[in-house]
Length: 293
Ligand SMILES: Cc1cc2nc3c(=O)[nH]c(=O)nc-3n(C[C@H](O)[C@H](O)[C@H](O)COP(=O)(O)O)c2cc1C
Image (tube, rainbow, N blue to C red; front, side, top):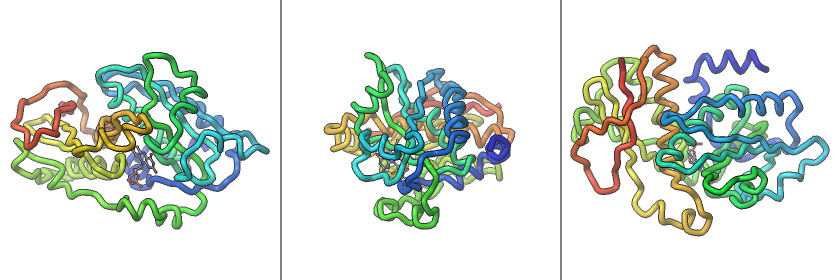
């Protein structure tokens, strides 16, 4: 299992291509070696791009008691899952981006193990998970992951919910990435640049809104959050207490960008270096820049 995981992670792009939101699992507890591998993973998550570190806890049903987790409640969106990973992070300016980066790092690792995952930022009972994870005052629980053996990959990929939100569709790179400013769509200069941007584009995002925008200026790739109007004040936010999931999406995009870039030899680091570009609307805001060296 370990070598399989390592081999697959050698190719981060395979994990990104393989990943999808799996909502139907084989309804049986995970075997002990898998549980142990997952537990080990949750303890080795690197810090997020702004230096924040969350606590990640595996909640797995024990053999003989597949119902143990049903009390945790996922509002019927998820079927057959016998394991979840909850994540908690100290509240702070960039905590949601750090959280998104870290949880997605886990998602890609777990995908490389051949397991299915689904991010859940709205459809779970936050208070029950917070209690199970001993959340403290000053900590937030932005999302959890369901984890498990895929029931049947083909039908899981073709699931109703995925169809309804056009989960396989993404905006074209020309609408997500720009050059010099927001007026000029970016034409990738070479294969590596194209591949890094392609991997960002394939990332998961809450309700598949794809709020990430990238502007290349010289050797800096500036990442922006294009908020979906009304999304953060929507039903999820108000009734379920969902954190700002679009900031979590930005962390996910930074994870895909960084891991692909590093794998393809594009060394660099994240910096806060707002170029002060003219913004196309009032819902967009600067997040961070990848400084390519
Ligand atoms: C931060 C975040 C929160 C999400 N919350 C939920 C959720 O509450 N329920 C759900 O069924 N899917 C949820 N998703 C999954 C998205 O709907 C999914 O990633 C998107 O539709 C793209 O589909 P794909 O992941 O299959 O590529 C969430 C994804 C992200 C990144």
